[in-house]
Image 1: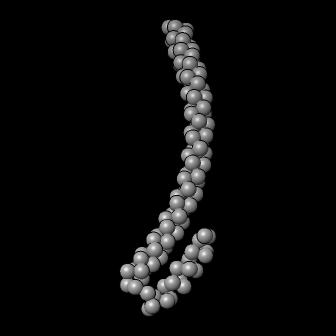
Image 2: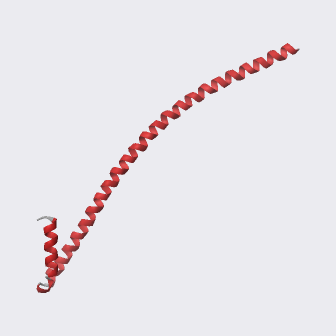
Image 3: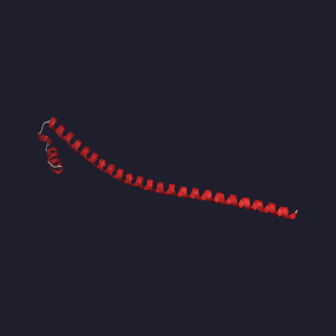
Length: 106
């Protein structure tokens, strides 16, 4: 029996509760409540599945971005090391030129 037919049958039975036993009426009310809860749970499950997919995509995007940033950081470290070497060379040359100039003035 499809969900639509079951819902309509429960609704029809709920409308005609006057002529049936209290136990059956209570059971039908509980059934109707259970169906409503199942629908809520189904909707929550779909929502969570969509959220999980969205978060998975976002995590993948952030991981890719993180990898790109790590590569860029490594490149910048290499450039920094080259600049340190160049600065050391310039400092050495300037120191030597100052010494040569002082010696020249003596």
